[in-house]
Image 1 (cartoon, rainbow, N blue to C red):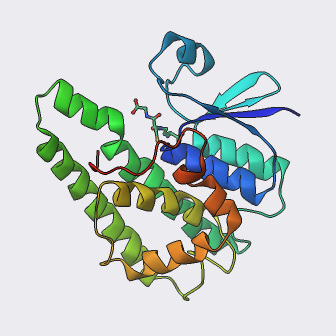
Image 2 (image 1 turned 60 degrees about the vertical axis):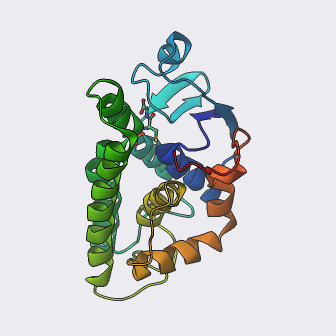
Length: 217
Ligand SMILES: N[C@@H](CCC(=O)N[C@@H](CS)C(=O)NCC(=O)O)C(=O)O
């Protein structure tokens, strides 16, 4: 089987897939996409979003669907907790990130606000800060309310909850957003950083990484 991942260094949904591929030790080729609005890329993925996964010439999109395929095809190690209620929590946590946080502050939303609605960069950053604060506050509360404290979000091994969480934190740091109000999240981030699968999936480790972001843009 030949697997190609269309992604970009700072593609948080793609980072979820990279981490899952790494955890499951699935080899893949990384294809850096600079411009997802191009006609060439639209022919690959009509959604014009990253990531996309090409398996033997057929292309699939949406990180959650891709991770579901990876789980069914390479079940070991699983990226879901074994206990059905912990599994439900992990899916809820990851989908809160995928559906309730990420789409609101995604680049194309903020580009629309600045390019079409005339918002200043400061106002657009205020939008980002508002939604990231609200989102991380909810995630920290969810972690505090777990029935038991565990090394990773919902267990002693990483699950989709951790896989979806870590890219949010890279983005927050990229924009200079302070995370010290979220100690449980920071503890889990540190536990993930111990694992090579997470480190290798990070934006800094991708071939198209241009270096740190001094302007927080
Ligand atoms: N729900 C999608 C989200 C994909 C997504 O929004 N990706 C962003 C980058 S992280 C993107 O491609 N944005 C395109 C744009 O903002 O124009 C998934 O999970 O794959």
